[in-house]
Length: 347
Image (cartoon, rainbow, N blue to C red):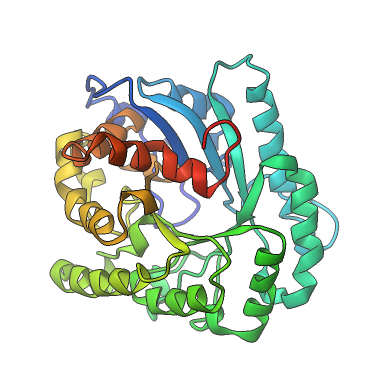
């Protein structure tokens, strides 16, 4: 069993996940998984071996994109602002291992998104340049987590952003360097913060932005029992955000505790039918609002692994996309990710 780093992460119970096994749907559908992490935390190891075990569970995953976690392989020494560059060095090493062909055909970590404190303003430039050197031709962008809520219990203790971080002069001065260096921005924030992302996207239309995890749906704490109210507010915010042509959205991240679906409390791991039923209203609204060409399915593993097995999760996403055209499926499962992250040979 894994030991979560904080209360919003659900322990991974392999014996519980094994209670639900399914035949893989549409095994020939190519997939790029545009959002996963790797780490070696006390009691929770998810490195290349663990990733490959999930990638080999039946779906045709051709490549992946590594997303920062701010807990993986940070440099032990040197300036604090530069320590996150160690994570990019690590991810690039994993990518090189997979590029050797020794671990099969999958191109794990074909794209890399690192961490940098954009609040440093112009002083973040050397950090971004160091990431580019460390990641070589695989480094694609930055994720500076912005999740904030009035309830401290909703916050990840590893991140303490201010409510107005995206609006602050320092953050925006740092953000401007992303455009100059050809980098993208992964936005992880809660649904009620989306208007601030709208303002940021409008101020920097040249920066490609992808909104993680369906836009930060909340269903626990003060949001428990308010599913319809949250859906209405979230939907309105997503409609406004879709008016920014530089923004895309990742469909996933719903296996975390935050959305409040509660599958982890059941005796058996959920089936893909159960997941699809719970996820469908949110994912379909994203596709309707943004269009398939601006949406990409994601796993968010190993964080989501506390809620469902890798093969079952992709089955659920295939069920949700069942009525989509072949062209739309191509976008949702690999082409949107390949274009956004500029993956050589895959776009």
